[in-house]
Picture 1 (tube, helix red, strand yellow):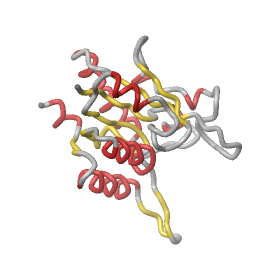
Picture 2 (cartoon, rainbow, N blue to C red):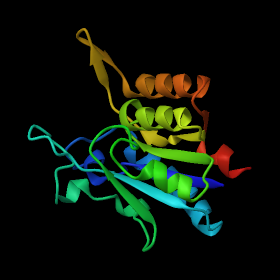
Picture 3 (cartoon, rainbow, N blue to C red):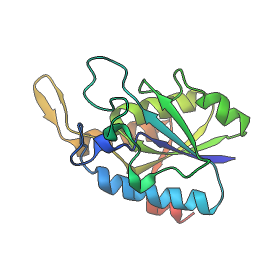
Picture 4 (cartoon, rainbow, N blue to C red):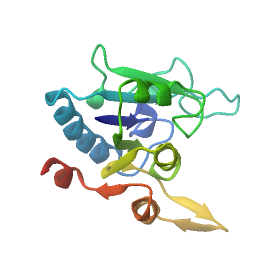
Length: 180
């Protein structure tokens, strides 16, 4: 059975938030298309919500508007939400047990940030035996730096999608996924 996993599509990642990402609105709009299909097909939808616990955290602070799931993909009553405190959505959450209780074998993943929480979760999911489809244009990230060099978000994003597509998932666009 298949389930949709929506990772960290939270207000702090959008314009006006504490850590805006490049392309977050477009990614959320594409995630909404996938969400609508899963709801229409009556397939499980699972949300991951990151709440920062570190005293040095600058975003996803507890009990803030920024830590709330974005209105565009807001959960309906009865849709499962797991709160996490680490990039890997499986770490110290009940996600794995929940997926196994539903006999889920395939995950369709979208969310934020491609280079961090999406990457960590997809890799863990594959290691736990799930087949993963990653909706690449329903994910977003930001510019990164290394050795005083700025790597533009589109290159960060594409590099992580390509790496995950190599073994850990099948990376496709929302439109390609919806044509199936």
